[in-house]
Image (cartoon, rainbow, N blue to C red; front, side, top):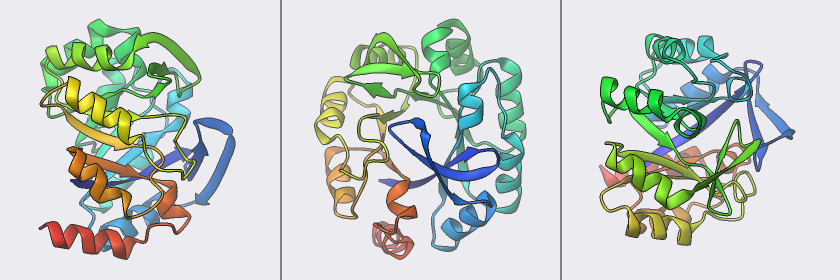
Length: 242
């Protein structure tokens, strides 16, 4: 299982929210590049970078941070937040993203998202399926759609999607543990999907459980920033699995 730390960006700074609420913002570091380099120094190869300003607006905003991290580290970055058009996608890939995550766009403009899958391939495009009460949420989680989570994932799996990042919004940033039952349900009903678990990770012991479930990766945010999981622990975990 891949370990994927998260950096969420507001106004160029590394922040975390609770349950996606922008009013709960905590700034952890004013230099995202410094944070990314600390991850890389502990053997981490992957990064989940989210443009929270972009997620609230109609376009990519913090692509310069992406460019900075991509050019000064070897991290493989998946980038999301605010990708609403072909131009946004082009900017993200030209700025150094290895993959992009589409969430709102996959709900609000299926035609363009399906075009991206066809043009760039399923190794480059990740489905962001973030949910509240198993309903897909959009626009930086500020809106809830009418889409049921599992059928939404299965529909896009039929369109060629391989990778899915799923966050249970009720768990995100709460340090109360991930949604094991929800992930088990998704994996049982969407056979072969590469599921990346996100939200609620609070202790190192939860990681082997997610791996046992069959998650392809896990995104860890606040647990790192709050010192609940150390980078040394993650480094040892990665080394053991090599």
